[in-house]
Image (cartoon, rainbow, N blue to C red; front, side, top):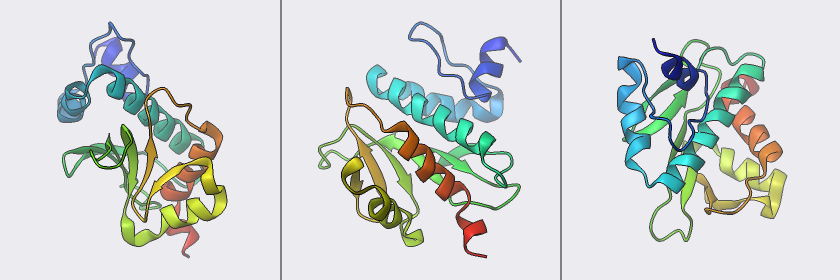
Length: 157
């Protein structure tokens, strides 16, 4: 595995002039990221890094599986089954936003985020946190949302 592949699998965000390459099992995910316009790609890769960093520092989460669900980069707690899937993608064209972090709608996670954080985020009800290019992402609050999703099943016990 090359140093770039190792960096990508550890959650590093590639620089604008670095080619994203990953091991064969991650090639499909890398191809999806690469297909986005560069500005969206950079932001989605930042969200990816935040998810992986949060998983690494959150007790009970374990290893994260990065795969594609519905054609979108998705993050699962396959080993521990501690959490709910998180997906990253461009936002829908009618949303007025550029990219999003999606959650499984029947978990009511987005509703909980809105109760906790109010107008800190823009929401797609029961489905996503929405973001715009050039707008600062509220990192601490987003880390809390990600931790809640990655430990969703632990909190239900």
